[in-house]
Image (cartoon, rainbow, N blue to C red):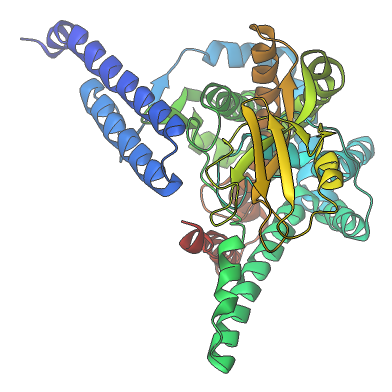
Length: 490
């Protein structure tokens, strides 16, 4: 039987297998997300589900890939990229130039052979200032939607307020970023975090060796990792997380393709890279031989186009987030405080249910963390504490420290039931996650690591492969150090 006819005959079976394992993987991840099981266990099982489902889907459909990651190639969409390139060639080139300044700061003037226009340079540097002074201080908004030990500490939950950053540290970061753009910002962030982790480990070890006191090891479990897994349905909300990732990846790869077509480079295909059922990457496949023949500036424009679009989306979705916080969220939600958890060995442990909304604390109305602090300001050992919540009223005697052992979070409480508060919260989470992911995906792609966009730009400027690989290995070492706290957290 001809191969084509056999493939058509097996098509219903391939569709059934694909749907069966896709739905099964999705149900498994949703179950793990709501099960309350330890994160390490849930993470391992989720990765296994994604690996198995990815391998089965890949084999059943004859796709290229390995270890659960496969390529979904298509020529569909290439005509749309052609149309965008024809209609806005100058705009896309200007976007890439702006992105080069935003990515590399004043260094872009040298990296791009002094071909960056003065207006573009000013716009890029102004955007860096906005990023450091306005956007960076509000990155904490993502904490509301992370489910990562050591990162989702009980600080914020739900929509919050907008902040501006003015401090010596922020101003120092501004100077660094003006000179080297988001690249230097990311390197400074990685370097500082890695140094902090190394210092904490070295202090704990030296204290144990010199004095024999191992109490310093307790500080290691509170060290926040600099690298965390992003898996919708496990560490991020499932549907808004998947949608945000799709936006990040599609916009990034489309921009590469558009700049390639502006430079008359042929595109062979485009598609996405799912791991199981979760998209972890996307691609546009240009003719690399044609790319290599371009002048360096145009090559760099193609390489930097993806991160440029991610940074533009960062500003766009930050603006949408601000609109939600100022005009939409207050209509559907009111400020409140919820129980984030209870501490073993304290009077409230396993008594008050996690997620309970606090109405009053010893008779004082509660709607903020500050009101809880005010109500508890005079607590003494073995004093009586009355806590009223939406799930019941409780009376405790404080322990010898004058506490009952609850962790509280500032939250937003729906003003009423119905669908609209849920829709508003979904949009808010989607906007926040998309704005933060666009920034960090764009920033990470600038690092001098193989297969990253920044690596190809540096290869065009740094002729010494030895120097390039030394820089790359330094980045790899820093990233490994940032992962070390998982040893103690998990």
